[in-house]
Length: 286
Length: 147
Image (tube, each protein chain N blue to C red):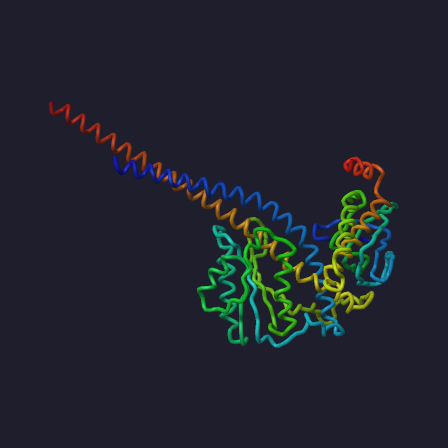
């Protein structure tokens, strides 16, 4: 009988867990819908801005702009975007692993590699490891705002301008769909100029007022826009990853409950059978 | 000629147009089909375009415009149609910005002063565009809501 009770308790616990994972899945699904809309609206704007800056950056007469200056990458920084909360599948683990692998692969090429971390999960992972951690941005993904994006962008641009840094790379999850996210490593600074293939069509633009002035007008906001986009990508990816992780957790719990129920019924039947045999053999003995 | 107006809130306009007039940084600029490739910055102002013989208006913010191969792409921080603008709110935000402009010491905090000034410009622009081009029905709705 003790065994029966143990199984019953176990079923109760798993059911409770299942309720939690189910609730988390629903919450993630609801937030995902909003996050997905936000990122899909933002993308055309962000990509357009990036394209035009890349176009402008490719022209020789603006290449002396402070944010376009290409220096030998001696001191580089890795800016990674993780979440503050766990239970979202491989969302954080993928970022951390990619960042770590990147550092190992490029260790020899640079004098110094440091890290800036957005999100508690990345911070907790790397603070126990042998890396230089510079800045930690907390509670960013809970509530993505222009102000936070511009704070992160400023942080990188200021030090790039002052030659404290020669390059900044970013590692983030790009939102593909609710069930897939892709880890992307991109160069944030210096700005990558557009490449033109030999002989390919290269429109000969007129610039008004001048290339330099357009660049000055568009550049300052540009990095904030890109960071803002990446934050939105991360939120949508996080919600997608959590939704699928919680979905499979709920399914697994269901299977576990089924299995436990089966063994519970078996144990119950076995107990009844034993009891019957006892009664029958008792009756026979009379 | 194709026009697309892109903002952080998504694409605002995707349309076939006959002509576009934009508030360029160096003055108003008209674009007709067959225009040479051009990149120019955009200032706070009024963008208008003609589509199926009707003129439509947008209140724009900072941004830029790219023209090539008869595709006009306007990328701006915000673009509002006259009917979407809440005049009462714009008015309130003009007043707020003016109050701030009086309070802020221009020499001590030039950045904040500039910001407030731009905010006033944007709000005034929205008001102007709405007053000139909103449909009477939309204006009436706004007025009723204000009362």
